[in-house]
Amino acid sequence: MLGEEEKERLLNEVANRIVKMRLSDVAIFLLESSKPISFLSSQFLIFLRPFISVYFSPQTYDKLIEILNDRNNIEKLIKLIEEKEGR
Image (tube, rainbow, N blue to C red; front, side, top):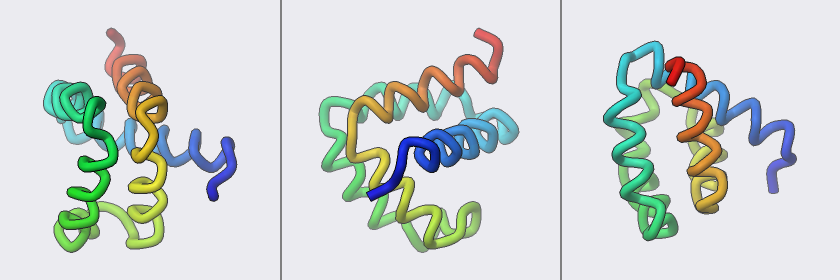
């Protein structure tokens, strides 16, 4: 299980990459729509692992999947993206 500090660090890293790649709107839309089915969404992320590993190390990606199992963390990520985007 991940500590709070590591969760925050990883969520910040993901939010920074999303904003840097100018995918904020798409990411927020997908995150908002995945909240009701967060467990299924995290399982889909496991399926996407080979494709996403281009952007994240496998260990980091596995931690991200664990974090996104919780709806509260999805909301935190959305807020971080919005803050970094200046909304």
